[in-house]
Length: 134
Image (cartoon, rainbow, N blue to C red):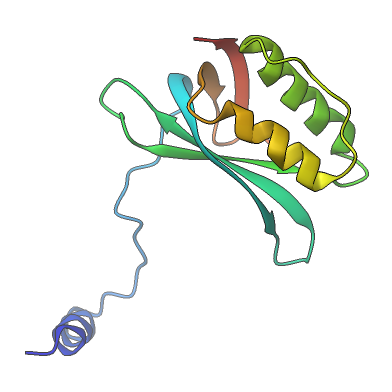
């Protein structure tokens, strides 16, 4: 039988229109993570940003991902660069001067597979605070 037909019929029969991610939210707390991916993206508003995917590396949430998006608006650029320099310092990577967003992506790509201890707070404006390198 057609999978879409079965799925949609079941949703209609049950009047089930609530979206679900299939995952419980990650609770605020301290986690050991590694940087799994870094890439430049464009927001719905057309602003470029860096998407950094962190993967929890131990405990019952091992394998879960946290997105640490880095924005470079007039208001946030300085603090975002400071966060990047802090990450570099924690894993003994020498900070450098950036010329554009691509140079920042290249630099942050050096964090891939590096491990950190973070404080995660889903409600905070800046959700991830990097505590130390591991």
